Image (cartoon, rainbow, N blue to C red):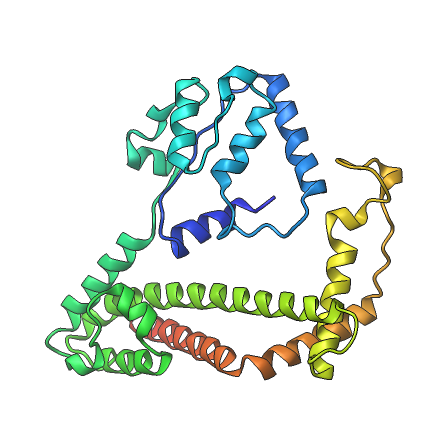
Length: 306
């Protein structure tokens, strides 16, 4: 079960894909079965769900096969969202007309636009407003993608300082606001990339620490790996079941006691480990945070010129 807000951010801001949302036309009994199947899958899912690796359309197609008439989904495998959308529309289970008027659909929350056009228009406005007042050396990037992926926090900080010297001063607030939009996008993308990087490293340590025999891990890495392995085993849905399969009854829960003091100590050790093993990434995020703080101060100082 993945939070909708995280799904929107992942596809809209990272994958840069539009999202369309259609209510399924299910009767009350079908809705009840769908909820039960989702819960059953959650309590029996054998691995961590990662949106960048999963195929949501295939998973939804699989769920619906147990709800709809067998012949309506017989032999159907949805390998792409468009395939599933077309099949559900033919079965009259969704109404494609709901997103025909895309702006209205956006207002209703049934269409989430990719942030790509926002980023490009924001970058274009910045370029048009700083030329020719600022040297091209301070903004050498050709488009928003290059600006977000290749510029360093230090390079952007120099650009921000130059913007603060622009005249007429009435132009500054609008440029600073646009710069903050892109700095926020950079912060989001770097944070998500960093989280994934840490997660992969922790998974690797957990696998290594779980092996029997000689390990090549340092003492600190081994301790972190063992703690992660223990955390996975004690908090994974499958580990919370005493026995059986599917949605557990109250008496089928394992009572895994976690010592709060031990957890706090382990989290502090993890924080130290992250700062020691990802120094460059941590410093980059700190520099981005400082950039955003500086931009907010500049906006506050020039807000009366709007």
